[in-house]
Image 1: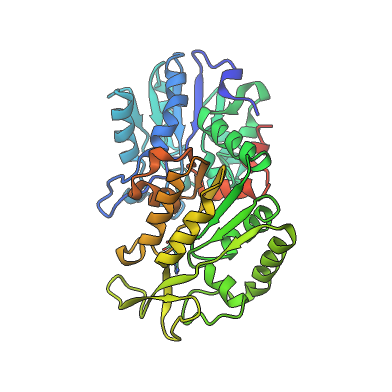
Image 2 (image 1 turned 45 degrees about the vertical axis):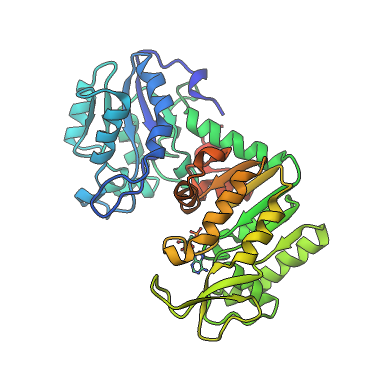
Length: 396
Ligand code: AMP
């Protein structure tokens, strides 16, 4: 994959597809601006070369064709202004390919940055629509994709648009290059012992990744809601905990394959159970054999935290995706926070993927201790699965 350094961008109109899909609170304040910060090296590289910079991103899932303030990228513009220490040089269009965007692109000067509105305000974006892609492409001489978090989606700004440019005029940005190289190196050439820590709500979202990981790792640690499908597959009573009955067979096969390969497979040995899915529920700690019929497991218990910490202690490479419990509620956050501390304490190369998991690491105050925190959850999972991401494929 060519990077921005391999092509000549000097003084040109450069379109950079970013991933500015940052979390915001109910008041619209950005709560974690890592994705914006991580886009800065590519943006600054272009500004230092007198480019006219056009930035585009999706933000959440608005209804196509309808402008809604809460999906606007205006807060991103304000944050970018501060980060770049620029003011009037950073502006935002009122639309994506409409009158205002066209006028602002035409008037854009060297060293200025224009952000287009949320790409998903246009129906063509998620449909990988060629006509829409052509309109976008007409804004620029150079196409740069730096949106690792969106690269697993065959959308217009990721795929069809890249095809509109000659190979010498398209490349990936620094962030995307870093993410793709990091995952490839770690997955295909890990320093062992290699441990995968997998959690989150369901097996289904990570089934392919688990099937792929079991062939590569030395140990697998399972926590979160998905642990109950594995526990049930072993014949345990799991009460009202989250379970995917249709995946019991897959869960059994994964455990069987782990045994065949000599991969050590860790499940929680105790759990924090609750009588309802609520922060103010009654809770107790029980072993995995004692989950009461009408209660649900919402976090791993203290003994599991110790077991998991010991399991990862000798690791040289750790991949972590998915929290150990419902960490959003204080009562069930401990298992995830302890997992984060445990990984941070090791000397392993640690790779954290997934928005929720990155959020846990941030809350735990361990972000600086991790080797690499990916900006893309779905995209990083697909790399683990061994897939070629559409956004990468089109640039090869
Ligand atoms: P995922 O997107 O699959 O990584 O799942 C992340 C979500 O899993 C978080 O919102 C957690 O609240 C949720 N989660 C973790 N553990 C459990 C559990 N034991 N029961 C229900 N949901 C859980």
